[in-house]
Image (cartoon, rainbow, N blue to C red):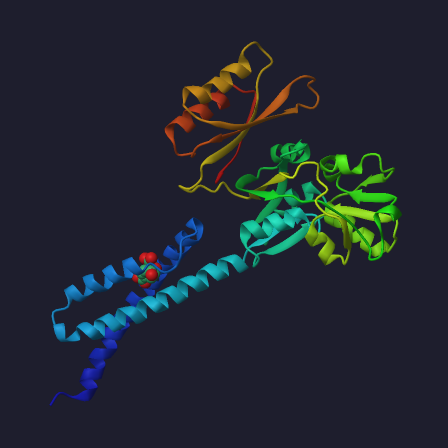
Length: 362
Ligand SMILES: C=C(O[C@@H]1C=C(C(=O)O)C=C[C@H]1O)C(=O)O
């Protein structure tokens, strides 16, 4: 009779190999989880599981073991999916993102939409603070408004993108509904002063006109709501999101006061490194053309020559050089595409200033 000790010794040797292979398999599974997270794919893929079980059963020499091997794979893949879910959750928890404003601001709303509500959000006072804060090791990304569908570009953010060596890694459009809010008991007739971001005043100009209200520009819509809540003054109101009213215990006196119901703000996500991925389909660059005949025409012509669709163009003045401009171009493409490379090379070689701002998903 075979010695039990000897058999167990053999099992121990096999188990060591199994542990090694199990670990190796789980490491690869973790890579699959990362890919699925990026592409927004579900963890479970029943078709792949079915094929995998069938294929591995075919490798079996002892067919009596078929139901056992099947069960083994079902359990193994359940563990694999548990591990993938854990990796995905951990990746979300670990993300610290900075935004300008305070709790309840539109930027924070965009942040949670983009990163999920498990992300940790850090408020800062000024747009520039978002860029500065990214120097901290524990902050991975920043969220900033870049343009509004009714009032146009947020110039300060465009200028800051040139100043700091950071990259646009994502993009998020949010529908903006502005509300007039004040403390409990206040009525529209009581309001004398309204606090909000100047952009919000512009977006609600129709509602605000001819009401004799004093408009006081403030850092941010949600900070304005916070102020009105603190002062407990019936003559003060703020313009901001429903969320800002909620978190500051304010009552909405009038909702949806924006001039245009289709009022959207586009936010950008900035990061420390250029993030490339095969799902990225938009590119942002900034350059300045020499002040001579046809220079800008030639630069823009290169997009047509390479069949690249320009989505947006903005210009900002070059401070200290009157009537010279920085041109910000967004166009469709992936940095690894040859036509994109050709267009970028051309612009880079024919501009007095050039900066690559990022490749991200449109
Ligand atoms: C690893 C994957 O995710 C899940 C787990 C599988 C596995 O552990 O082999 C197979 C299919 C999916 O349900 C995958 O999709 O390949």
